[in-house]
Amino acid sequence: MAACFWYSCGGLRVTGNGGKITQYAESYFKGEGKMLFYIKPIDFKTADGNKLTADYTYIKGDTVKKDVVINLSIYGEPPFSVADSVTVVYSNGITFTDNTIKHLFNENFKKHKFTRQSIDMPGDRLADYFQSNEVSFIVYTKGKAVEYKGAKQWRKSHTKIYQIIFW
Picture 1: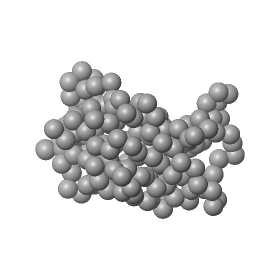
Picture 2 (picture 1 turned 60 degrees about the horizontal axis):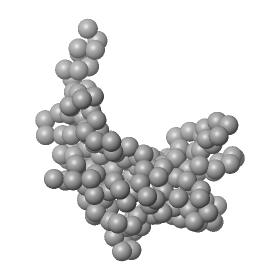
Picture 3 (picture 1 turned 60 degrees about the vertical axis):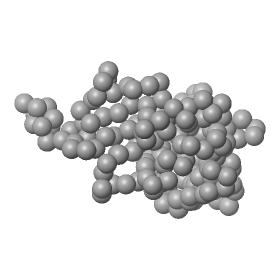
């Protein structure tokens, strides 16, 4: 009964086969004229091989929540600090900086130690972002900047993701 009530009041309804529309993305019906897109984690790496993964949540057609939520998993060794800011660089030098980083949690598994943090990017920048051949995240923590560049996975996926959301 409660599930039926939740469903009828605008809960997420999966489209297609379990929401998966490609190996890179899932979509969910969010109500009249709205679709939620979840872009699965994409790897970014530093020059010395450290890893950051980014996944994205965007509601197309929403006139209130227009931002893209980008969740970052930053791998490394504890103790982890919350980033002071994150700058996203794309399309030949276009940048966006978020100074209001949200700390979600830290994981301290034996082989996979990471901090999970979240930023918001204006939704009107998403099309240019996913059309860019080169994208990087610059994470600023305690006066130190670390740049993570789009790895092989970015080059394989960004055009397909753009086509899913904007075509």
